[in-house]
Image (cartoon, rainbow, N blue to C red; front, side):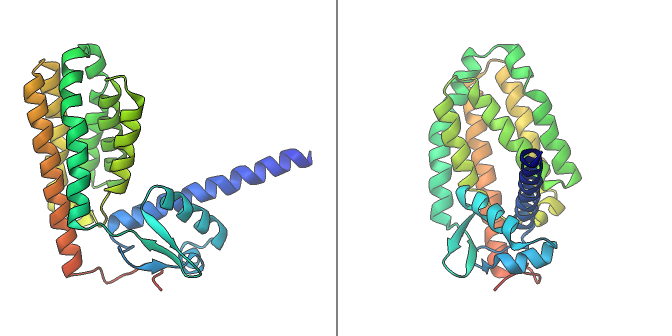
Length: 236
């Protein structure tokens, strides 16, 4: 019986850790947690009304994703991305994703491609509704699901890691401006081109899409640097 109670406690703790991690990701996306700023686990715990333990565990999860880094005896610093970092991540993604999308267009069946359409539509719905967590999650699934059709699991893992490390913060303004909706619709357009069997067109569309996303992120980063949000969650 004690073993069952122990398992239940572990399950509750893991669930709380996941909840805190999702809340922190949402704060990153909204710009409430600022790149370069150090946040302490106790202060964040007070903000969320939980103990410091699940906050530290959640922050370690985010550190493994490259979103924050531990600062000894202080807390966690939100990872900063320079323009060069973004250019390099985008270049690597382009080298991998553009030719792979062309290959998938040539080899995947119509049924396989159509199976990804609901996810493409989820991206648009999330962008229109301003649900940034759902937007990023659907966007991640769409790209990785398409790449998976090439049959190379290591390729998919590499792109997934690049996407985590190049994720920018403070996307609320982009959503409010409607900029994300245009980017979201590029996914359904890409799928239509691929289903039509136009491999060269799909590669060109992917090239433009990555460039468009890079431009949006750069604009948001410059804006965030000019005027940081007035509310800084749990900053030291």
